[in-house]
Every structure is written in structure tokens, then in C-alpha cells.
Length: 99
Image 1 (cartoon, rainbow, N blue to C red):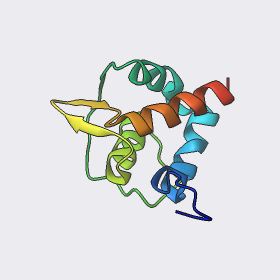
Image 2 (image 1 turned 30 degrees about the vertical axis):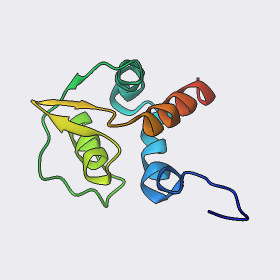
Image 3 (image 1 turned 135 degrees about the vertical axis):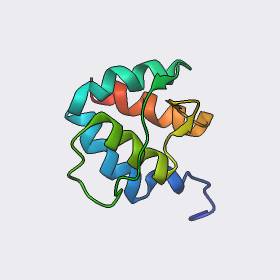
């Protein structure tokens, strides 16, 4: 809460901004997968022990691993998906703004 206004602190913090780089530049065609996730689909992924502190993620699985570690995606049954409505709206806004 700032100046008696409620806002989404979590999606306005560092990890969201860092992941924006991958979406904006469509690294590894991530935009198409995010568009599917925004409409509720799940995307196959192999999540591993990748460092989430580096902006030098080279594969889609590394990018998704970082997003899972940051809490920006959820991983279950070898698939990633957007875990809540707040993030779904943020990704939708991001994809629309950058299209």
C-alpha cells in the first residue's frame, strides 16, 4: 500500500523485470508459449537445477526453471503454467504491450 493505494508489489519487483527481457526479445520463442499459458494451457518443460540469478539463460528449460524459482510459473507433471490470475493478467498485459 502506497499513498492509500493498493498495488501488486510482487509483479512489480526485480524478477518480473528480468524475465521481461526474454519475452521482449522472444528468446527461444517464449512469447508463443506464454500466449498459450495466458489462455490457460500448460507447456511441456524439463525443469532443472539452473541458476536463476544469471541473465545468461540459454535454453527454454533454463528460462522456465528461473521463472519457476522466481514464482512466475508453476511446474507440475513436466509442465509449466501460470499459477494465478494476477500473473496471468500481467503476462497478458506484457504480451499485448510488446506485440
